[in-house]
Length: 352
Image 1 (cartoon, helix red, strand yellow):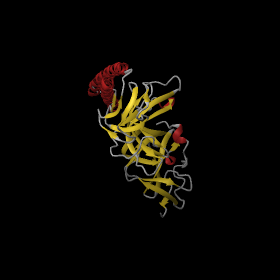
Image 2: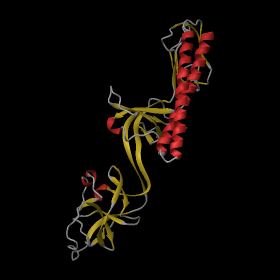
Image 3: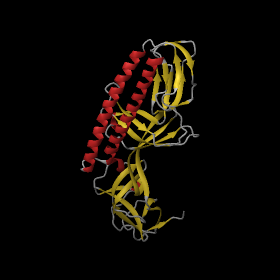
Image 4: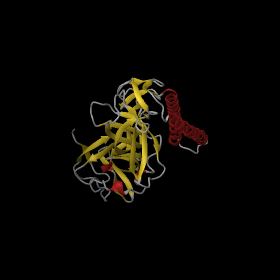
């Protein structure tokens, strides 16, 4: 196979030209790596911030705040009364807007469902990858969740229109509270926020990653604060094109599957997106792969002598690379040597 520039740039063990030039020499002391099955994964690294998976800002219909029934940090259930107001100046407008939002969410949910059903047909026919099918499933579930939120928002708006009330749109935690009893409430200023369960990270990544990141890929979030544990997530969405204003690509990571995590909203950390991975792979240091006569070779110690094996490579991850063929589990790959290695050169394993 042809060698890539990325591999040849890391050549630290060179190959000699003479086939048996070193047979009469004293054995050369080398270090070897006994091959065993390992996991290898190629990742993209970004800085990220955790955000609430769902968040609602509650705007009043207007009037005077009569009662504030919750405080910041309180857990609330759907429909729970949060604030009571005396009037409903623009409540009907809020209700109308909520209806429009619910209709739009219903349309998106229907489109996402049809897309998933079509994707399932393509997958069964072998025309669609599993990761693309998973992406369609994530989009279907996200659209369904948005519809539930829109319906809850309509319920809250309708309740406000009927009685000047603000109620919780879904189960979650009260964020900010700007309402105080006796104060005037303006329809353009939110009085409370409610965040639902689940965490997400929203990224803007360089254009070069547009074709690398796909929905369904695994992701790992490691907080910069050691007191919090890591989270496992999945790429929920990735824009199909570059934003014309920022020249960046929008990506959303969903951590819904990391149940029981104590990580709070606003936590910063390092996010890794796994673009390629392999289990039970043959993995060696990249520096051991050398270019020889337009092929890639790896030195192996066989019965006290160097054997140069032609190999094909797979996933590259940092300073490691996967060997797809040419080596086998149990082979002793030479990873360090004080001289250039030739075919047939006598070698001996150094003491650890």
